[in-house]
Length: 261
Image 1 (tube, rainbow, N blue to C red):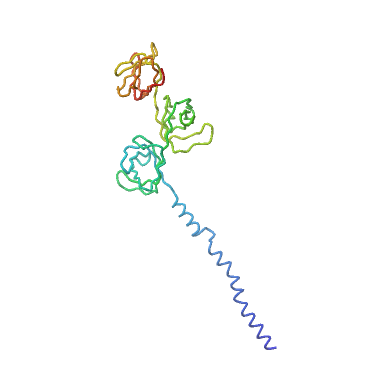
Image 2: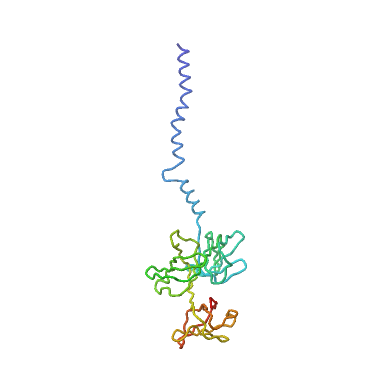
C-alpha cells in the first residue's frame, strides 16, 4: 500500500511542471504582441518612413556636368546632383527650360542654394497642335504626330487667362490615363504661336504671308530661311505671340518650316 501511494505522489510531482508550463504559455505569447501594436507597429512605421520618397519639380535654370539647377515652386532654386545611381527617365537630353520631376531621399543641404542628390529624374514631353480648348475645365485637346490626341489638364495658372496658342509643348511626369483620348496633367505648358499661309513676297530678311486684308509681314533671321524657299510656297511660321499693330500686321519668326507649294 505504501509503495502504491509513493508511486502516485511521484507521478503527480512529474505532471505538475507540465501543467504550469501549459498555463503560462498563452501569457507569454500575448506579451509578444501588445494590444496597441507596440514594436510591431513602430517597425511598420519605420519601414514606411524608409520607403518615403520626396519630390521636387520645376524648370531647369542651368545644366552642369553632373548637376541641374532648377526652380521649384516651394523650395525656390535647388541644385540637383546626379550620381551614378541616379535613374534618368527622359527621352531627350535635358536642357535649360525643360521641366523635370526629381525624386530624392529627403536629405537637403543648408547651402544657398540647397542641394539634393537625385534618385530619379523624370521628364516627358508632348508637342502638337491645339484642336480644342475647354476653358471651364482648364484643359485643352492636342494632336501629336507621334501619339495622336491627348487631353491635357493645365496648371492652375492658366485658369484665369485661358490658352489661346495654336500649338503647345507639354511637360508631364509620364503618367497617362487609359481613357480615349488619354489624359495627362501638365507640370509646365509652353504656348507655341504659329501661322500657316502662302508666301506672297520674299526678301532677304522679310516675307509677306497671304494677301489683302489677311496679309502678315514676317521678319526673320536669314539663317531660319528654308533652303530653296520661294514665292508661292506654303510655310508654317512659329513666333512668340507678339503681333505689331502695323498694316499689315507684323510678327518675328522663331522657326520657319516649308510645308508645301
